[in-house]
Length: 315
Ligand code: XIL
Image (cartoon, rainbow, N blue to C red; front, side, top):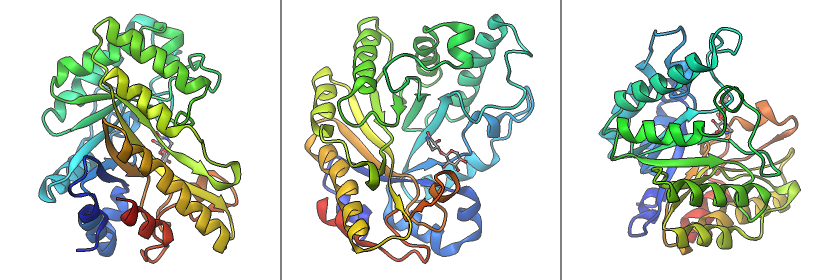
């Protein structure tokens, strides 16, 4: 068949999408396209801490379990997203409510409980999401303030204990090319691995915008992680633009999607390329970046755009 999934077959790169669970439940053509086009899936929101533990000690795995069951039915792997982040944490999880020692115990329990719940069912976890600033300093978060920089190593060790077979990733945006942020990740990855911390992969979200131009050093960046023996993945690719779309922007978008896929295909250890939604019908972009959109490979009617055809041909 002519799907992305078929195009990716025979390469070492898996093709994935973020999945919107509300859409999966309500929109049959959307559901059919997720099954047909992709061989990995990432929950767009339903494995985030605020969803899985809405009240202290009260878990709700319903939506995440549904995605895992869907993936198993369709022979897809699951990327778990995400364990430690500064965003989308439960409202009860604050520095006012807990001491640093309690926060450390809560983070440890969160990781053991969530990774344990999905043990054997999640292929790769985004363990730590967006821990660096653009200048390569550690982001000021509840975790850095309460636990200090070792919270990252701790998170990886706990995740590995909870599911020794899962691949464990760092993940961030604006870290696709060589810059201060990706330099910080490269240094951190080397340091952690030298200490025996189980870091297996480097995730690049890949949220590009045509009006800012595209990074030119993506392949070189991926290749330096290759040399460390570390896996890489593009985890959340979309290529937004200022609306309205036109032919030139649509063509520039093709290049953005292809540039990241080419780097992944040329790298030795790039294991997956995931789009952050495949249709403009449910993309997060218009809600977050005012005046921008058209960021995915299919339009609001799930019709393929040139970016879709570009990806298929690039495979
Ligand atoms: C976004 C989701 O797409 C939205 O639905 C949600 O409202 C906010 O989060 N980086 C990440 C993702 O790692 O988890 C974010 O997902 C997009 C940016």
